[in-house]
Image (cartoon, rainbow, N blue to C red; front, side, top):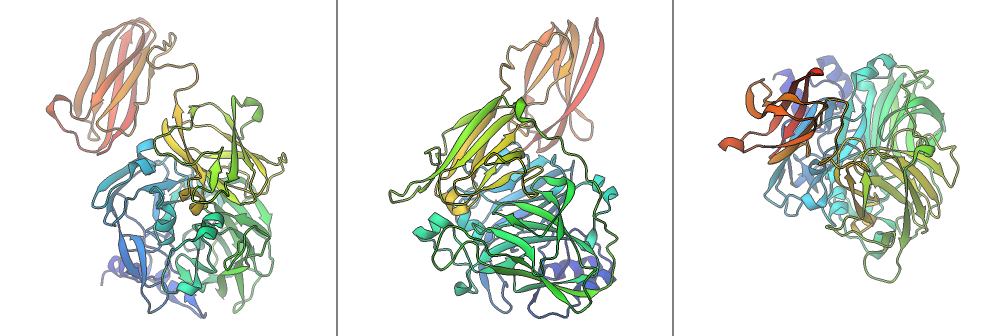
Length: 587
């Protein structure tokens, strides 16, 4: 059997192969990863998604517990879903095929994408339908993920298995000395109910809608009672809370310290030593753990410490849980270090805030659905609840007027946490770039956010998925900057070729350009091979802002999906100007 075929079959069978290693693993690495001395179930890893391939959603049977079939809702038959591993600056493409019996979308959580790629419920793909998700990967290197976002079905779909990693790599990290390859390990933490083994039975009652659908059995990368063999060296663990509602207080069983190096949006600006931290649904935190002080034959457990939280009943928030046992079995070195410094982060200043918005989180106990609300509102598909100007720094003041825990998540751009109850001395898991923030009962959290890359309609909601499906979600729209109207703005002192909008587009888009003086203008469109496929402008133009529409069906030609380039050249009394920009056509 060819090595690649052997590895792919082993991946499908649940073999332990950390997916950040290139697929062409050395045979000796493969053999070492199969060795085991522990009891329980060896930690599994999902297969890697091949960029440009198909993501097919369907009901499937998988082996979560040995020898037993579990019915799941899965992408390509994998639970968790296939892991996307892609380099910053690449273009991600996936053909999503909905073979399930309910509407579905894919939301790329934490990933900055155009409106039509974001997986908004308004853009659901009906059963039997398909849709091509394609977008440039502009995020910082970091740990992101994807999951269902269908209207009032998100919680059930995710609980039944519709979620997976979306990891962005960045070559610039290579010089930091962080652990790589088999020592860079993704861990998706989810909870299920032991009373329902081997099924993921989702049957929420009113208390579950109030508190969230909680379980008592942790699964790590879909593995129950999981263990992972480690060497006496430094590891990088990428922790994702993929649970519907459970919050974890992450620690080691012997209270040994470790370092936090990254939050939702990638690396922090320094590694911070801690003994524990909170991880709420939708959040990601990366840690460095050093096993060099342990002896071979020892073990230590990654766990969730007990903490006081609202709610009651059979399944309680804050329950102590053992998550993953680390068995120390080898002496191999990762060669990794805890960096003395990490790349700097440019922090927003609250003095630069242009607009402050207040979001009050409440519970309506009047009976029926829609218990959880934001500013007294519940989600309406076709209602825009506010507009945010592009490139304008805003303060979002979140006031939790309830006794519930709410992990609040914003789509599109990452934000920065300014303070909790007025205190700017934040816990390390809050500091850096974030897209999800836990707001405790009767707490006020202030965020600073600026949307710089895309305009369009996005979502702000609670990432307790039962709260979200109950309507704790609002629409907002990123619009043109304040005081700027692209139709009549006149930039008199500069040449400028603007990014087309919308981008990606289908079937048409607008390209705008400014010329400071009267000039002869040529504007052409090229495909990826450099072939000239359209001339949009070829004439003398007066100074000012000009716009032209480009259609994928112009001239009787139907252009295929893909990347295209548009080039502006201008010759006038102020000299010559030339600029090229990229755009993307989707169908």
